[in-house]
Image 1 (cartoon, each protein chain N blue to C red):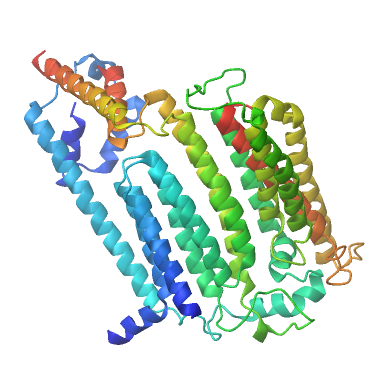
Image 2 (cartoon, each protein chain N blue to C red; image 1 turned 45 degrees about the vertical axis):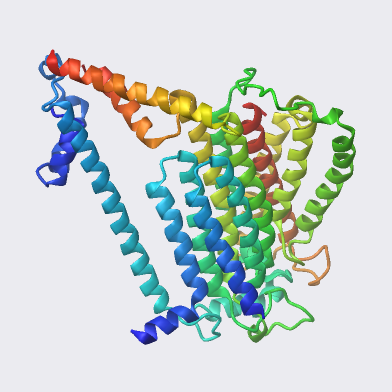
Length: 299
Length: 131
Length: 109
């Protein structure tokens, strides 16, 4: 049986092919006779150290070469791109023109970006919401430790911030304002910059400040874990159902009850406003639960 | 050659995006700390986003929000890269949250974030099984 | 004028990214990464994409840095002093030495 460093050196000099190594790694290849043989390194410590140093040097050289090749290729590509800020670039094609010129009329959204990501390319955003949901599930699985206070309290750390009058008063003033700002951005996603993602993140930051100051236990009593999960699932289900309806009627030229409305009004743009709210809730709950899992291992 | 170089200077923002990407890649390749590797991946992400947003910019035009009912393409920049990057930013956050939780798990098991020490301990463990 | 401002911002981006790569302490790297994200959000406003600016300021500078800080706190890496680090390096070296010694013993056996 070969030592790993020796193997690496052999591989560097091209004497080992990867297919044989892969076969070696499969459990079927290790027979009982091979296991009975005790572990014998081929060489003494000095040569092993030399091999390790050699391997590290080879890694550094290869990595530098890789970086140089990467940057050279990318700079070459940049040198052949159309010049910065030109209006005749091939990216400004009929698709972008259609989105800008017909977007307001067809979707009812004044903000073309919101109209694009929540109407023309709504399935893209649905997939992204599911990416967030999947990340939340994965973080839950990796960080979940209910009931165990694994985070050691540091002695310089003040854990009851809410007893400090300055922090308490400022937070009582600031949290509603941040929450309202987030809701404003969320609801005005089709009229002004913003929308579900940024509004949801700002709302989540308000909740995070609450949990930070008043402590995890009180926050998890105020916002129970079950409510968070139900909100996320309802938002995702509503998004999927409403977009399925709108794509179904749109593709089959059926009459749809959703109308774009008057562009510029707050209650316009058909499905974009409720979809923004759904995406905002998903983002808000996901970010808040990221915080809670990283902070105390449970919601 | 000279023409290429002047063109590179014209596209200075794309060059900056390339530099950011390469810095992130160097952090991924050379830094031993797992946490710094996560930050490096985030920097790589933002480099890519900067390149995309830079391609959508058109000089002298404004934000693609229809004002005063003017829906002529000559007034607005390209909205497509903005939408793509908006999607990408949120995905990059969920990716980094996932990797940070993996980092926490690794630290709990091996009590180090150094890649070399991790390799050493992992090979220890494997050989311990074999011998 | 705007071009100069843009150049300053882009230089700041590169400097922040390089400083993040070169600092040794994770805590400093996280703080510099936060500054990097804030500069990035201003760059996006300059590129006429305020949607991206708001999202980056809330998500990149806010949530990502917060998660990085929380990770540091969980791992107790905040304000770790030099002595502690030296101690850890020593224990690491001891571990490596015992590993090597074990290997030699195996070789003799």
